[in-house]
Length: 512
Image (cartoon, rainbow, N blue to C red):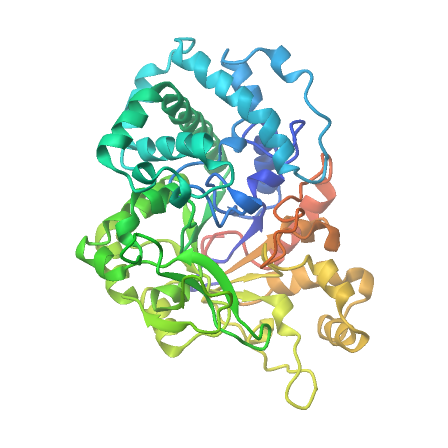
């Protein structure tokens, strides 16, 4: 069989969702075991969410830095192996939930141990000093300011944003900031060491994953968090007023799902400033992320064509306006710097012809969500012409049963009314007991270039395993975890069969 394009498949599973004895998935032995298991399914991709250190709400899409790694992903067992912690440090850990992350509990117990290991490193109990120095030099663009931000946050934060710190520090007065850094140099160095730990462990993990024949797909939130080292150290890149406060924030306008729209609250870029600088901050951001992953999904891709800007201080998104962004020029600069870039465009929602042109002219595949396909037409009848049904897809998409923002497929199906359930069962030609794997099968046999399946669907989990509830601060958000032993050889072989019959082997037909 000859094929004009390579067909692949992947599994969506964030690192925090791995099993471990210490309350949260990390880069220890279970990450490597999961890489072995994913490789055994025959898929070629492992998709993760943004890897930055999370703040309020624990959202990976609102990290304290877009350049830093999440310190909570560092394996304590690896630090014991390297002599930076004693095995007794891990013996009397709290009893953590096996299927959910209690972020506050994990942070309270784990961060002091991480800092203890960092202090031991700085006291000379390690042989990697030259590697640490090289890391600090290479990452100087962001590392020092991130460390300063975290120490300032610990010193003055207590739930307050940097706009409420002492004015001279919040506004980065050079003399005051230098004095603060000098006074707290030891604490700054600890945060830098933690980033070095993350870097060492992540690089070793990525090498292993790639050696197993898997590529890592990362994620790029188009906006950054208001309360982050990114905004504090680069305030000039964002729209502000005369007092240095954000003058506009992001969101989406009112629609059939929300009468008042969605107020995301992220500061919006001053694209004129970014453009004058040759998009230098964005280029460095992409350099960092491409060094950590093989492929990048850009969240809210349409924001590069036009973004919805809401006056800061508004309680809803009703008074926003659409503002054009220089996406065409931006991606021209990106291509000149990197060459062809492996980017996937998250193009869900209302797409305009100009957004589609921006996506297509750059050769970026878009996304399809199978759960979205089972809608009704204006007469209340099943709409089999829906763009999200597999028979209407072409190859230029990455298709999902659902994403991190959707309910699990089983949770979604059980929430439908009886008429909608019947449409799904009729389309898939299956029973209710078979609906999850029938959805996976339809996805895999579609024309879409790549098919990605959330781990929850492979495990046939219900709504209790939903990963995110958009526009909420539910304490279950981002917390679901795989329990030990859940990923069986039977499930791996079942997916491997689908990979084989759907020709999603990552090879061209004439090379298979």
